[in-house]
Length: 154
Image (cartoon, rainbow, N blue to C red; front, side, top):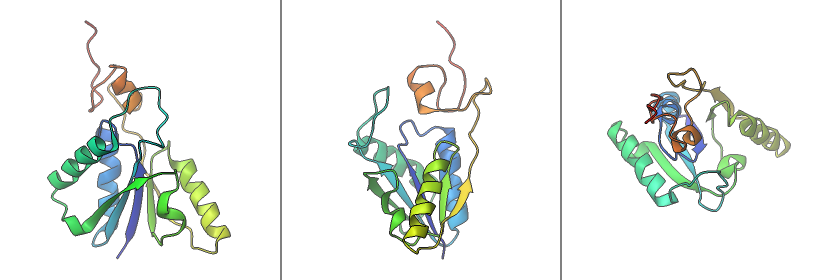
């Protein structure tokens, strides 16, 4: 049974996040998805970020709405970029272009420790209407909504 790792802040749970989460459950199949949710302490962003508990609540709502049984996933607090992936035996790690370098670093460290490398599943950005990737930063700035639709200038 595949054991899949996915990490993120999941601030606005936009369509890019949805694609990553959907891919994680697709790869896991009968296995389990372990989602590391960035802790409040680890965050250093230019825009305000909701509390860990609020972000976790939205993430769980999304997963529950997908109809995923509770035993098929686990959400844990990420206090560093690598989380449990350095020690635990995962089979896959799901990444975006933004998090791909972290997965490479994780595999380098795992190999030094004599552990097998994780299979990296690269998920491309979801583009907004303007062809620029959807991001929480763009949503926070009011440029786009969670689905990448451009917000009309007032």
